[in-house]
Amino acid sequence: MTPRENFSPSPYVAINPMKSKIFLVAGPFLLAAAIVLSRDQRANLLPKLQPGQSLTYLIRYRAEKNVKTESNVAVPMAPDSSQMDAHGMLRIEILNLQQVGGKPAIHARGQFLNLESGMGEKKPADKKPDPQQQRIDTAIRSIEFTILPDGSTEKINGLDALPPEQQQIWQEWVARFAVGWTLPAEGAKIGDKWKVEQLEQSASPIAALIWARDSRYVRNEPCRPSQLSITGDISPSSGLADECAVLLTTAKLVQKSSAKDATPETFKLRELKTMGTVKGTNEIITYISLTTGLVVRATEEAHQQMDVVIAKVDGSNRVHYNVDAASHSEVLLLTESPPSHP
Image 1 (tube, rainbow, N blue to C red):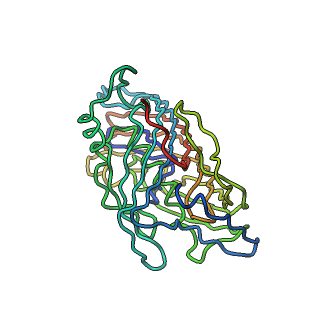
Image 2: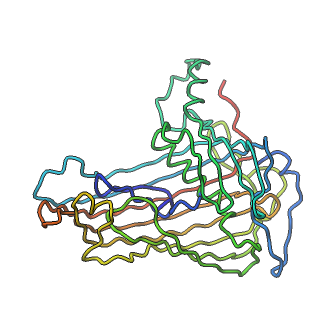
Image 3: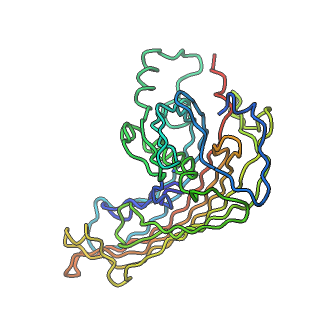
C-alpha cells in the first residue's frame, strides 16, 4: 500500500500504503527533439529502452507511523510508532529486453550509488575510501529483477539483503517507473480516464482489501530531467526541454470484509479473529516523457488508518491497535551522476 511505506499492526502484518505492487537517461535522449501531440493523438507512454542502457534516479521518501495499543495481556512484538526519512541514488542497467504482446519485458540490475545517502555510517571527510570495501558495498547494494509486460515484477534477487530504507527506495522507484505498463494498451490521449481495481497483496489483519484507482491524462507540459550537484542541490538540467504527459492517479482502499469479522485465512489458521476497519487514500502525479517514455518525475502522497482488534477465537487475549500512517515520496530522473568526492 506501495505510495511508499509499511505499518505493521501485529507481528503478522505488513500493510503497504498504496503499492498494491503493480509492478512500481540521460545520454542520447537529451538530444532528442520534444514531441508535441495534439489533444486527439494517442501517446505510447511505454519506455523506449535498449540492452546496455543505464538510467539514474534520485528517490526521496518520508513516512510517519503512529500506533496506539490497548491490551490486558503482554504483547512482546507489538508494533511501535516510527519515522523514516530515506533518500538515495539508484543506477539502473538494462540487461535484457523482449517484446511480449506489444509491451517490453525487461531484466535489469539496480545499484545504489550514493553511499553517503544517510542510510549508513558516514566516514570522516579526510579518510579515503577502502576500494575493497567499496566493492563489497556495491555487491551488497545490487538487486536484479524483471518487469513483466503487465507491470508486475518477478525474479527479484538481492532485495532482502538491502537495509529496510533501501528496500523502500527501490519499491518506490519500481512502482513509479512501471506505470507505463499499466496504461491502456492502445495508448492514451489528453482527457482520457481509466479505472483499475486490484487486490491488496500485502499481509493484513483485515481481509478482502481492494485498491480502486482512477487515473486521468491531464495535459502535456514542458519538462526536464534533474541534475544533482556535488553539494546535493537539485536543479533542472541545462539540456533541451522535453514534453511530458502529466498523469493524475487517485486511489482509495476499499474494505470488502465485514467490520464485525474481518479475519483473513492466515489468522484463522492461528485460531485468531479480527474485527475492525482500514481505509486509505493515495494521490500520484507522474510526468512521462513523450520522447523517451521514461518517468521524468513522480510524486506520491499517501495516508492510511487502521482500527483493528485481534483476539483468540474465544474472545480472550484481545489486543486493540489504532494505526495512523502517512508518507510522501518523490522520484526524479537525473541527467548524470554527481561528481565523485575527491
